[in-house]
Structure formats: structure tokens, C-alpha cells
Length: 174
Image (cartoon, rainbow, N blue to C red; front, top):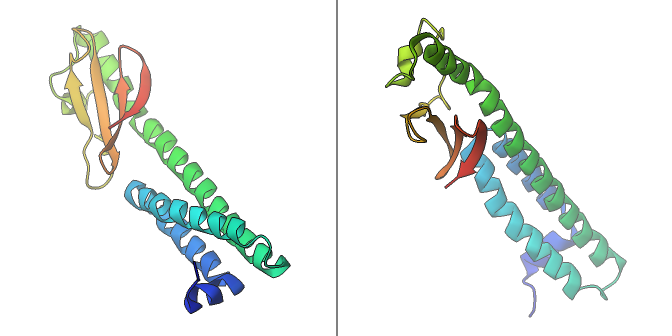
């Protein structure tokens, strides 16, 4: 299959891939949803560059070097994207730790969890944090039995990150 002229120019000078990778890395730092979009762009670009590299192995060192640089750019982008997503998840858990502590303090003082999460404000928590500026913390009492609750944040797309009080652990789910 013949490559068109624009593709040939891009593969001779992969600077455009590096600029695009940098722009996508900056975009991914803006939040969970942009972070997801980076993967949707970077993975196909990585696969296209890998296939192009394999297909053009015998076209000389310049073709291999340029395609290798593109693969390196996309690999670095995906690694940064994964680290960014894990960091955001870790920060979200730390951000909501006072809510969990406030709910546990409420239960210790009153013998049960509140019906609404904002009932712990201001006695057990100074202010209610949000998952993001647009998304509140979702609270479900007694979902795991009489002594349990779930805290959930919609992180990106339809993905949710939840704390299960019975298990004492965070999990991702869709």
C-alpha cells in the first residue's frame, strides 16, 4: 500500500509527532476526561507507527530512525498519561480521606452513619469537598449492610472510583 505524500513528509521529519505528543501531554494534565482522550489518540498513533516501522524495516536507517522516534514519542506519551491518571486517582483518595474520617467519627459519636453525607458538616468536617468542580461526592448508606457506606466519584467518562467502607478499600468500576 503506497503512502500519500503528506505521510511520507511526516515520516521523514517526525517533529510533528513530538509536538502533538507534547500538546497531548499538556491536555492530559487538565483532568480525567482529557486524560482519557490522550489514550484514544496515542494508542492508534503508536500502533500505526509500529506497523509502519515493521513494514519499512528494509528502507534504510533514516526510515527506521524516524519511525523509531515516533514510537518513542507515543510510548513516552502513554507512560506519562498512565502516571498522570494514577496520580489523579491517588490525589482523589487523599482529597476524600477527611470525608471518610468524618463519617467514621459521626458513627462513633451517634452509633450509625448519617442518611446524607453533608450531615457531617460542620461538626465532623469543616466543608464538603467535591470530586471535581462540577461533580459532587456520591454517598450511599447501607449499601453493604447496616454498617456500611460507599463514597463514589465519577472520574472520567463513565468510570467511577469508589470507597467501600466494609472492605476499607478503593476500587474502579464502570
